[in-house]
Image (cartoon, rainbow over all chains, first blue to last red; front, side):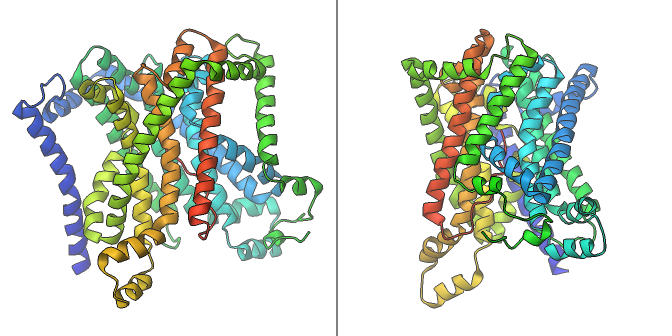
Length: 257
Length: 277
């Protein structure tokens, strides 16, 4: 009972700074301290977002962004989990993958974007490539870490029961490493969300990032806030959806922080 | 040579010559770089398009970039902004994170706000911040500051939360004041985790720096890179990519050295899981 009340109080405390931030925004905008050309009122921005939800062009932009995001994330997840599990299962693969990761992981991937544009063109593929490059490493590293931390006795028991080594990777190691993999995927998902927006800001003809750049060139401040809020809400929604999926997939696993 | 403890898991755990070679420090990295260059070379030959020059012509461009005084000035200006943004972020984020870690109320206060801010692409705020602060230094430093702060807060929070209670009790029993406990117990105990946050922050600072300069084309590394892209100077584009990539690797490696001298007593560094903004 007290625990429930306590968590409710904590949730209320947590909503406070968000409400304060919105109130501050509202106060500055309405007091005339900042002209509307620099800081539009929050209600104007949210009304505009609400109106645009019925606009087919805005929806087409959202769809383009979502398509790139999910394709890139899916490729990164498949590649990352496969390579991570393979590296944990075989020393030879690990010997190849580890130095490559050490060289490539700290490289700022945005700097690779010009190379992707030049080789893959201005369309979907260059953005998807950037999303893959950015989301791959967190997923790969988390999978590898999770897979090498799997209790060896689990693997020995399975092997003693006559399971082949390859099947063992899929039926034992992959399952046991699932919590770590999910953590990596969640980081990768948020990163994908951010990166796809940046790629669209740099060169694009559609998408939410392109909306922001176009609005900035025309000094339409309200339209600049709309895509940023849209992508943030999208990130929050994806994060929540992912947490729900994670809770479903990890049912019965020991609870972790 | 003896098999290591995890060896029974793998069937063929005999030490082989190739694996013994991999133990020489630095060699796997050199081989990895060579492999990447070879893959690039093959791709350049296979595609045979102007927009993907061979790696050798791109590498030949690197000394030209580094020999050009203006380009070096740009790179130094970028690094200076990055250092200021990163430094300010560390000064603000570490105390906030530690406070969140030690006080449940502060954590409850700050956590949801962080959750809301986290998926906002910080570099995307650049056009709006430019409206407010102009295209000069403050706007770019602010964006780097915003990009770096969150991971550093998050890891400091985790580090502060995980401090062994018994150590705090012992310190209190020995008569240490709350202030002294914070600096002499909590900070050192949380330092390894803070360093993980700083490492992520360092990579993020580099990414945000490049992106912010790409949006506000005035000077800096990102400006050289994306102007070269717009003017179709392909060799310069790839040369700059090599320079930025090397910069990322060198900064990360340098940080590792600093880390091991500061918190060498802690567990070995976990590999980086960098975010991106």
